[in-house]
Length: 129
Image (tube, rainbow, N blue to C red; front, side, top):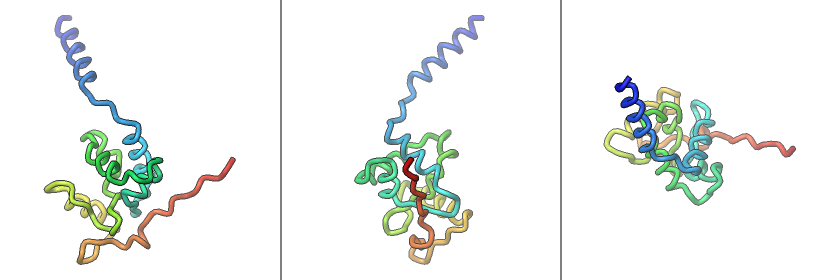
């Protein structure tokens, strides 16, 4: 009985220590989840779709802040910079991103760029009610 109470108190403390996800980050994750397999968007395009068109750097920060648990649910590797290149994240990030893109059939040229004109997701426009 005592062990159960202690475990419960510990889980309550752990839950209280978790930083809440900001609204903008949640909007970024929703947009990125919608990017179809084999397509990409730029940080700026994601920012615009998330409601803050001038917040491309904030998109990068939001994707960097993904927790280990959420990184499986959010296809972060489908977001590239405006030049169609993989942005430097940390020591291993670019290789992992390149591998994941190649698994989806997205090839990068010898200079590390992808064909944005062909691979950028054409976001469907919502119809007015």
